[in-house]
Image 1 (cartoon, rainbow, N blue to C red):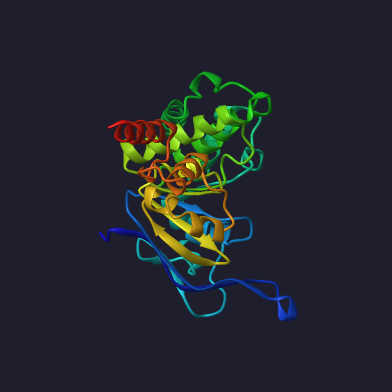
Image 2 (image 1 turned 120 degrees about the horizontal axis):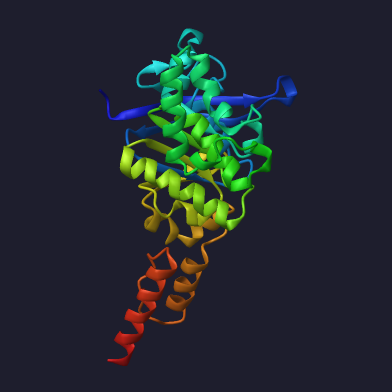
Length: 286
């Protein structure tokens, strides 16, 4: 089995027709390694959501050139759509768009029921998925009575109950408060670290990239930077070129270095930043 779970090869994708036609991606290529945690950052309109929807076959490449492969399967073939959706699950920005039933456990059971699984198997899968996202105790609740973070956790359960090998999340925390965002990020990270699930997270929240193995900066349909989180965040100029806000921790370290402090600028978290400043101050005292 190939280490590459998803391969995007020289893909062009367009919106509109005729004079209205606009290429969002042009000859775009990207490989996603099996078991990896990849974050794609970019401003609104950079093409990151288009890339996400290409990855599970919701969008097909425009024209005849280029292809998207999931475990070697071409997403253009309509006969493979169900298999691809089983392999690659997708969570969207607004959980209300993914909730289809009036009871939480019925909502999570919707996908397995459509697969024609036996009742016992469905029951086991639903319980397992709800426990995985910490929502088992709410299984009899009405979704619209839940908080935004709880709704998104149920939406994630509705995807992982299908047991995908890869989870793609398109701005899943954009509509959540800080507590809800933290809940969702904890779940995503755990699925990757403990279960080996391939995760692709599309976001504009810089701090959400901290636990990733790899971060891509997308700008106007092009990858302008590709590396580890610390490598990406230490390149202030490229971040600003991509129209992204520089993390406050990175900005602080950068400003201190610009003002003459001998300090490493590769920290992301508040804890790491504090440690860098403490170490630099101790050096100055000596």
